[in-house]
Every structure is written in C-alpha cells, then in structure tokens.
Length: 494
Image (cartoon, rainbow, N blue to C red; front, side, top):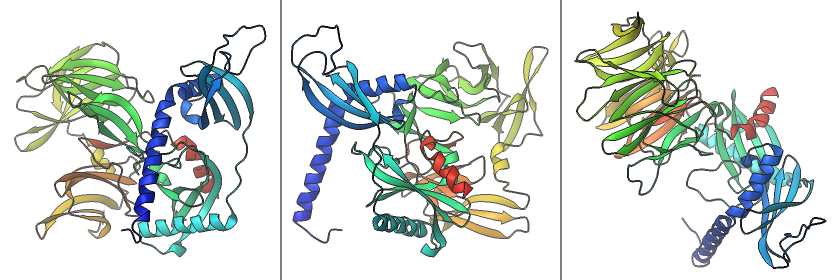
C-alpha cells in the first residue's frame, strides 16, 4: 500500500496525533463555543447548524467585562479566562467573547470576507478528477460526463458538507466548490477543494433518505439511536434516542419501539419534522408492525400484552395517553404487516400456508374483521414501474453461492438487467415511492449488508457500513438538502 517506508510512517503518526489533539480541543471548547452559537441562532432565528465556527481562540480577559465593557457598569478587576469566538452566518461575521462557562457577549460584527476563488488550473484539475471518479462508478467513458454547474462554497469542516457516521473531521474553514455533473439524463453531486473531493451521489437520491439504528455501547436494553442518513450514507442526524425497532410511514412520521426490560416495550410516535420529540402511545410485552392513517390522527399496531399472550391489534389516537382499543386477530391468524387501506386498517396475516388480507371494519360501534379481496399492498404497486415494465428483485443459487438480481421485466417476458449482486443473500427490500431506488438488506459472508441500487443506472450505493436490525428507505429528505438545493435547482435550469 505504501511505496515509501520509514519517514511516511512517522508522518502518518504525526498527522494522527494532530487529529486527536484537535478533536480533544474541539471537545474542550464545546461549552463556550456552543453557547455563542446558540446565542447567535436565537438572535437571527435560524438553526445552529446554519452557523459556521470560523475560529475559537483562548483569551485571558483583564476583568469580568470580557473585553466588552458597557458604559455605566462596574466589573470585577480579576483575570477571567475565556474565548474569542468568530462565527459566520448569512454573509456576516460575529465576534463573541465568552468566559469558560456559558456567559457570552457580542463584541463586533462585519461583512464576511469573500474567499478567493481557487486558481483556474487547479479547479480544472479537481473537476477532471470528479469526472473520472463518476465515470468509474458508472462504468462509462470520462467523455460522457460533463460539468453542468460548479460554484464557490465555504465548508465548515473537512467533511466538505458530506460527513459520514463515526468519522472525525477538523473544524476549519475550507473554501471550495459544489459541483454538479451530468451523465446521460442524470445529475450527480460532488463537493471539493483544490486538492480533494467527496461524492454526494445522484441528485435524485436526495429526495429520500435511509433510517437505521446506530448501536450504543453498553446500553443495558440493547436500544440504539434511530439515525437518518442520505442514500449514499452521509449527513447523519439523530431522529430519536433509545430505540430498538421502528416503522417509517409514508406521511413522514415514524412509529418506534423502545425496550424497557426483558419483558416490556414502549411504543412512541414521532410526528413529521419533529425529530427528537416523541409521543408515548402505550406499553406492552411486545409490539410488531404498525401503520398510521393519512392525516396522522390514528394508528394500528400488532401487540402482545404479556408473555405467552396471543397477538392482537391495538387501534388508537396519536396523542399522549390517547384512547385505544385492542382487537383480537382472526382465529389461527399469525401477524405479518399492517396498512391503512381506504379509510380502514388492513392486516396481512398468514393462515397455514396462505396469506390472507383482512380489513378492520366498524359498524354500529363494533369493530370486526372481514376478508378484503380488493387489497393491493403498496410494495407490489411500487414494483410496477410503468404499463410495460415490472421491477424484479430475486435471488438464485449459482454454484452454491447466492446471487441477487435486480432487473426490469417487459410485458413480453424480455428482461433487462439493472444490477447483479454476487454473494448477496437477499433478506428483504424496499422501493422508493418514485420507483427510482431500491434498498436491499441481505447477508454477505455471514455479515449483514445493505445496499441501495439506482434503478436508472444500476449504480450500487452503500448507505450503512455496519447495519444492525431494520434499515429502510424514508420518505423525508435529509436536512442537509437545504444546503445543496439551490445548486440542484440551478443545474436543472441549465
């Protein structure tokens, strides 16, 4: 891997040490710096994530005025340790002075300096590297990749706006560029500086996101943090802490389960756009699949009241301590999936070897199950790409090894290959509502693996490095979309 030895290893050790020292410094500065960020966010009425930390310098102030004395006020004449923090937001720079706690005062503000554009020849070099990278990913010629949009952009750290879970980045201003490339009819995102670049994936993939559970070390009930990332696996955001399973809804809401003990779970509801906030719906020995109605006012969930009890369906209102009622499943029915069909819940169950669809109907105040012959699971609808083509995702054994194929099947029976995943043992899959991407979860060499297949180009993306439990496509775009959306729109208008 290394062509030169000796000195290179020393250099790598030094760089690693510097990274650790900078990371420790950032953690040490977090309280006063975050206090300054929070103060500015409150004043400007914006999110803290929209503010860039330009610098945080340790300073010893002469008195408790923190270097910003106000007329008519008296201050203790004691040396006070703190920070000079430079923040940038909405084209303006703000200088804040702090102590070592949460006391913050504004010292000055000024227009943000415009970063010098990268030299033309270096910009051209990095754009060529981005084009070559995309050509390799798609298996096409570099000449088939064109630059349709590139614009200066200042990044807050070395992730260049595309941070990955578990990676550490230096908090430093990086003048760079946002680049939109085009290959065929598809657009792709890259971010770069003069010397490096990062891949942001197909622009169309930013309509959706991936949900998974990030493990938490030494958590006694094996709960993790429900996390959202892009379909490429960048820009992580915690949706809800302390989760053992979840069910994303087409409305943008989420039903989540939290384990509280060996014999107990709690059920929670996260409303659309309310990450970090959850409404407790109830508690039971266990919960299964769940669904909410179109206006997010009611829910249904498979539930078991206690150890050894039969599975039931609980129907209730989406409110803290809201009304709910438990309904027994039809006799000999084993729970599978729950949906809202028309205006009533529908349960997919197995009876012996058969799959049966039941609709929960209310009549004269009584709830009862009736067979729903007109039910069509949404997953099957997503597989119908158009009037002529059907999406096919299946697995076959070839030379005693699993091979998963993703293809388009024409009404004539002809098949067009999209992607072939050798050694991938398929467990389950989900298709995005626009039928442009498919998320597949399976086993590779006895380890869980998750991939996203671009159904237009066959590109295979890897959104989660070490998945645990459920991983699913979510109908809500990542928060970072707001950063890149102006560039996407400009590229589409060209």
